[in-house]
Amino acid sequence: MALLELKNVSKNFGKLQAVSNLDFTVAKGDVHTLIGPNGAGKTTVFNLITGIFPLTSGRVLFDGEDITSLESHQIAQRGIARSFQQTFLFMQSTVLENILIGFHMHCKAGALKEFLPHRKRQEDRPEGKTGGSRDNRVYGAEWSEK
Image (cartoon, rainbow, N blue to C red; front, side, top):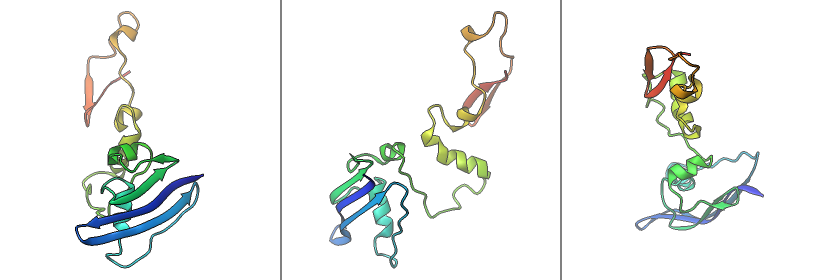
């Protein structure tokens, strides 16, 4: 079974046809490339797959599910994501911070909370233990010392 399928995918921008009746299949574990000159529609294809642009016609299937009409965040939650060509967006951040920004889609509680000690509820603490008097906040993630 194909992991990713594009079936008769087209995208028009007004009278300009950027992608015309594109069909291709990617099996799990395969690596494919899109090669072409500037303006050939390569980036548009990625924008169609990831839900950035709506299709003019056709369908996109991921792991057997039709994702054509899903919003981009719903597609990302299923495991399809893209990076943009602007590598300078977060130059003031560390490598780890940039990785955490990309990782946040896969976390239930936020990327930083996944790596930080979890705050225990007061009722879960042993009698008389408060968990310390100092609460810390790191980029919006709440945690306390154990």
